[in-house]
Image (cartoon, rainbow, N blue to C red; front, side, top):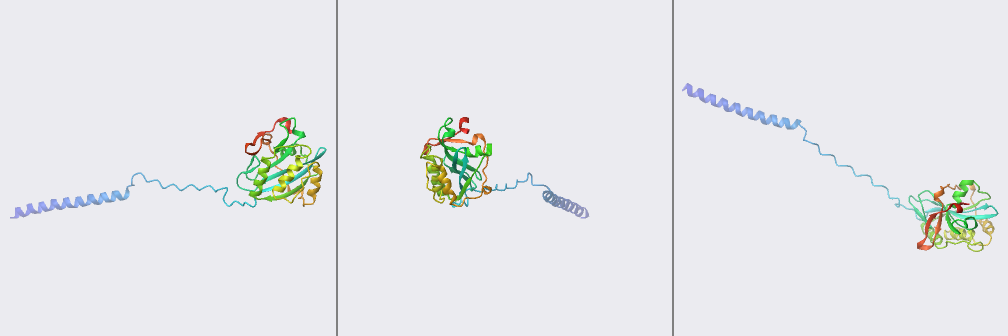
Length: 244
């Protein structure tokens, strides 16, 4: 009887040891899992790149560019041209020229001084280059006007379709006065034969001080001659003979 009881106690002891060991094993596994990393960590979701601001957003279509009508004494007679400065945060079109944000472009018809080069007609940035090179800007008269997007388009259409120059009618004063009028400036009669008359007209329309007007010099390869008219108008870099 005592022997049977001893065997039974031995068997129970063995089972109890297995139970405790199994429980300890489970606990160890749980503890191990708790302290071990979960393999390779899942990378954090990349943050969305910031969306670049739209340069056309919040466009003020009433203030697209500054327009200047500029006359200065050039050798034996006045020369008159128009100058536009881009007020937007994106490119704008002036005639056949693409003007970057914050930059400016001069536009004029030229004749005698360019006849041996690319011929007579519309040039872009010629005045900026010439004045920047020799610094001559004497007896200047300047009018200023803020132009809207619609008015600038009217000026652009006119420039694209009037690529010509002659001494008596389609000279620099006629072209510049027409651009000024189309841009909404105080009306000037485009007297064609004598640029001096347009200069006198300008005096009655509150010219600004020369100190309030800054022309940005341009590089040689930024001076262009308009070729053709309308939808076929293109630009080419002005030749050396046209530079004057």
